Length: 253
Ligand SMILES: [Zn+2]
Image (cartoon, rainbow, N blue to C red; front, side, top):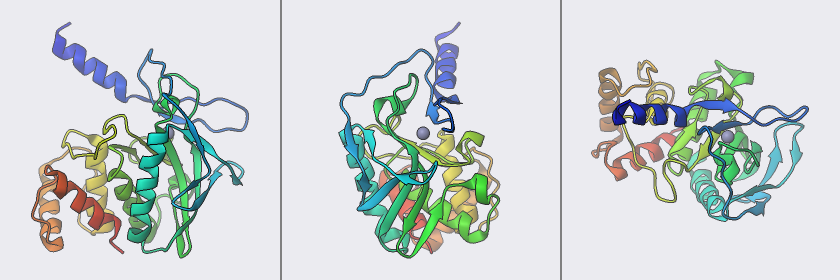
């Protein structure tokens, strides 16, 4: 096997998603799976709020606390602080989740560096990630779903939506496996980022874009028009250009 093909194989393995969490009545938790990799969290803290919003477990809808790496909780808090004013829906009141830290191999949940969002309730409305419940959804449901996803992409390079696979039809998964502790940047080779761009063009800005998952000409053409109308002069490949596009997507109402 050549080193190139081996690398491709490793990359393919690293991006395969499988359901994992077992237990009666508890739905499977989706995770980034690197075969044979068991992770141990550096440290864990318990948190029961984010951005002042109460946390709850989507299954059974009960208030709960979660555990995560303290630095990952800081990333989540930074997202929450960012998102509330952009949402146009007022302060967040409750975030329904499927979990953060889970003691299971092969997942960034096992590092306490992942979080699954099912719904975000605000004082002035709610945004559901339960595509399994509302899909294919109204124009507003889809717009708000992708606005929320864009806000998460600002902070987490690996944000998985319902376009990724069926396991993500009931939540958006975020982890910092790709972006680490820094600020995410755009890669045209990132399927999840390209899917966000395409869905934003289609469902937030109303462009006729096919969700192909690849950064193709029809996507770039629609994007150029949208960027021009928004007054964005920097390309997505520029760190500030990526953030500007995401911020204007997240705050588009
Ligand atoms: Zn997850």
